[in-house]
Amino acid sequence: MGQVHVTKHIFVTGGVASSLGKGLTASSLGRLLKARGLRVTMQKLDPYLNVDPGTMNPFQHGEVFVTDDGAETDLDIGHYERFLDVNLDGSANVTTGQVYSAVIARERRGDYLGQTVQVVPHITDEIKDRIRRLADDSVDVVITEVGGTVGDIESLPYLEAIRQVRHEVGRDNALTVHVSLVPYLAPSGELKTKPTQHSVAALRSIGLQPDAVVCRSDRPLPDALKKKIAMMCDVDDEAVVGAPDASSIYDIPRVLHREGLDAYVVRRLGLSFRDVDWTEWDTLLRRVHHPTNTATIGIVGKYVDLPDAYLSVTEALRAGAFATDTRVELRWITSDECSSPEETAALLDGVDGIIVPGGFGIRGIEGKLTALRHARENGLPTLGICLGLQCMVIEAARGLAGLAEANSTEFVSDTPHPVISTMADQHEVVAGTRDMGGTMRLGLYSCTLAPGTVARREYGQPEVAERHRHRYEVNNDYRDRLAAAGLVFSGTSPDGRLVEVVELPADVHPYYVGTQAHPEFRSRPTRAHPLFRGLVAAAIAHADRRRGVLPVDLPATDAGAHEGAETAGAAHAEGSADDVVAPAVAGAGHAGGAGGASGRGGGGRRGNARPGASSNGTAALVSP
Image (tube, rainbow, N blue to C red):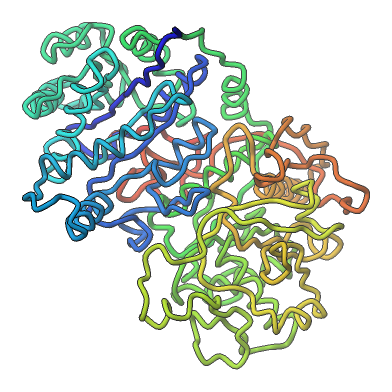
């Protein structure tokens, strides 16, 4: 008989403080194990009572990351997908709201046969089931991150469930990694280990002994300090891993590998493995740290005070920069401040392209429209995403089609020209007679691209699929009038009923494209999304013209840049003759960052990089 497959479990907890970068640590470890030939999947346990983050304030939670199956999840799921280059589903994010809802529904059905329903065993059993169900024959390792900090009341049921899982699967098949802070005290000039000792003691009091401790700090840890932590926390010397701040989040796998974390994990769990294949990642790091050109791209948004709200957008922008050998310097622009054409022109001075990202509500909308008008009239490369597409349509209706009062029913319910209207199945939600959470048009949907358009050129194929999250759509009653005014509807749903992509022709504007989808969710650092790559390429050409530099040829697109028709398309793959349009750009460059980001993104609640900061990648795992 063949050997029975046993899936291994790695649990990642955090202590002392939040925003240490548990998600990036877990993602980087997953990347290293995958590079050793192992099959890895990941999961996040979030202790909040919300069923999902879909109805949460972006200023409190950051972005909502949408998976192919339409789950609204924590932004760490985006890190997992980008580092592992996999598509996860809703099972990758578990919340206390989901767990309690399932248990209470079971109790109401009578499934517990009159038992007294309690946290232990009923809540913990539900958590264990959601952890264990990821372990099948197609997976070698499941990495589960526990949100929050050890000592939080909310996380206690999760830690108890993990303790039980470790007992059930066996100590040889489970491993706990604890991420903790080793702060530096400037007055004494010392790194202090006591907070980590207390954090591990708190974890042990719950019944969990960490197998490895990842020590976050703003500087490298001396070996003597690591030995002290190993002794006081009762872990092996080689299991104490230093994780000082890195200049880019994409450096973290190298840092952890240099410290030996992945080697310790595979030995401790008895995993068969090969040496780490660095081919793809080293190519990425070269592009991160050695850019040849620069361009400045602005994000005109409503939530720029918390860049985490646009985390996937900035990461997709970086990937577009990596693919074109460009350092992108990011400029955060609050749409409220674009209150007049003059103020908008001043804010966009020196910018080589803009992104108008998604959002909800009327605040800042007129500023977005003013910015889009400036970009349209001045040939400024532009990418509109979700609400950004809708604003493009409103601006075109006003500025090109002469419909001065054109608007969206989201903002003005009785507008005389509702060029953006509520989707047919969303009227009850908007009226407040149906639940708001989880009811938008969510998940992966197909799109047919018209030949000879900019979108078709960038994707390189006629059929693509993207992730969506919206309640409103382009009103088909106005399509003919808008098309006659010059707006091109270059992508629609396969049945032609729903507008997916709009643009201006390449001979009218160098790059003016809007998508109803969220293409940022399918971007990878090693495989840029076509629309972001196209934006950066057009921005390079704009920067060259602004500086009076002669353009050079772009580097060839990486092979397999965007997988198959079931994905978002192969970037710049060869198409048929009718796919060819005049290129919007002939510049080149290399990849940097689009704004400082921390362990959870760019700043605000989960990081301390100031809005508007730029970097080559991100200021990874920033100390609190």
